[in-house]
Amino acid sequence: MKLKITAIGNSSGVILPKELLARLRVEKGDELYALETPDGVRLTTYDPALATQMEVAEKIMREDKQVLRKLAQ
Image (cartoon, rainbow, N blue to C red; front, side):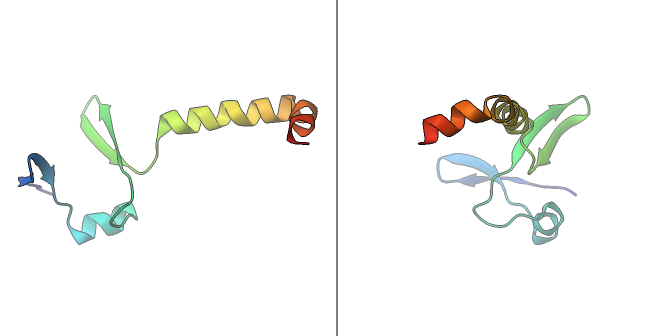
C-alpha cells in the first residue's frame, strides 16, 4: 500500500486509508507504535516496552502480595 506524506499544519503526516485502519483495528484517537525492524518500520498497536513493564509489575504483585495488601489498607 502506497502512502503519501502531506503537510499537516507546521508538521508532516501520513493519512491512513480506512482499509488499513480496519486491518489494524484502530480508529481516530487511538495510538500506534512505530517499531524499527531490519526490513523497515512496522506500525503496530502493541507496545513491547509497555508489555515488558507490565510483566515486571505482575511479578512484583505476585511476590509481594502481602506487602501490597498492607499498603492498600
